[in-house]
Length: 438
Image (tube, rainbow, N blue to C red; front, top):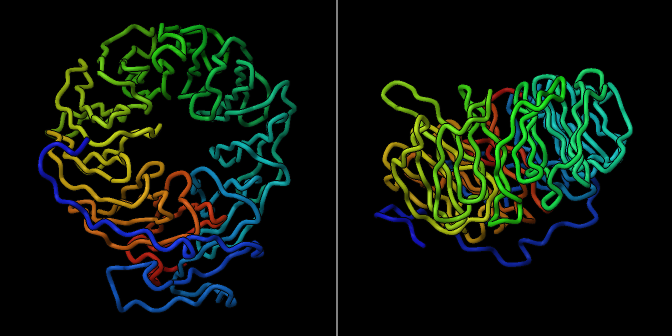
């Protein structure tokens, strides 16, 4: 399906030859300065200074910040996390890289299949154990064995919640690693980090027995439950809840639900014609804007709903999407990847603004900051386009598919690639040097 209405079409790019996409094998791990290959990077400023080629000695950090990449020994997966001047990346272990220089400060001694960074700690699991490390230096805070295999780790408000294979849910004290409570009976059909139990504030949410359960994070007492259906029934697996202003918003199958956070009472529901795989995006009211709840179904239709009563304000069709990432709403626009294109719609009335076509499926969720949209694709490229008009600002071709979602922080864009590299790029110029101090 095509975007309804007339919208400018962004400048699509051709996929480079297969040889250009081949990852460099056998390279030693470490920080390298990004090399600009001919045709691989096109920035808005053609007069920017050249960057030393791969293989040269990395210069010492100076007053001029330089883009960098760090090559891992193993595959990189997931979305990087930026906190306290460090970039945390999962590549079998958790690696902490200095955001200014790309130098690795430390890595965990254990494998980390899942991780969450919060409260000055890295919470991670190698499967049969759960551990917490100091986020600044990687030293052990606490470590505990698990009776089972951990597949999901979430943390919020001093609680770490884990999901274990076979339907287990556990809540831990984030500071001391003490088990507060555990339960069985959670769903077992889709055990993944995205579908596992989660914690938001004082409540832990998980699905089991056809019910969405809300449990007190401290005591384990059940607060309420709400029928959502079995996971295999028409894709009824509920998505991660979004809790705002005393309301729990989530999707389950074809439904968008708004539940009272205290009692679980249904405030409203919206029935879409197709299954929704991604959580809703909530925008609070501000000024003349009444806010909204935005969702996209697997056919690529985007819906804007009134957060008070669930009334449909508008709907616009894009392309089929299998993404479990919510749409991104920023500066009055809705951004989403659907198929091999990035779409931007007006948040108030759904008017199409622009569409930018890549040469492969869009991966993860776009990062929107400072008037720019950054997104990755299976065509091995990281793109930066203008948020207002969709014009290409720059792109970087890596040696593999982009993994997870890019992250934008303090004028720098971070992204991971299947070429085993982590990239730190200037948000304005890409691989161009910046006047920003390291």
